[in-house]
Length: 134
Image (cartoon, rainbow, N blue to C red):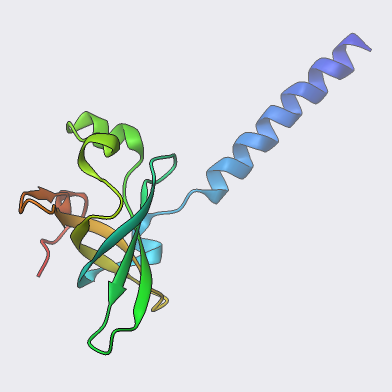
């Protein structure tokens, strides 16, 4: 019985790791690195969690209609490595501009290339891609 429980535990760990590896995807699979969009909107929420930080921006079009854009980026550790802390830099209710790789499916989603903060500072993150923002 001792060996069958150990074997079951090992099998469970291997299957769990396989599912995790299969679930991970390349950013390029979901976002077109050659199709960039620039949006400006009010930050309504930030999810500073793994596997990707996500920012939610309410963006008004010329008619006054609001679309919530979801902008994804690296995980929190990737941002901490370059000296960016979400709590220090990103505050809800403030207006941000994001230059992002557009979602391939046409939805209001993007993968962050550059943030322009309310005070005008830029956080350039485009080095994650092969080409600079246009």
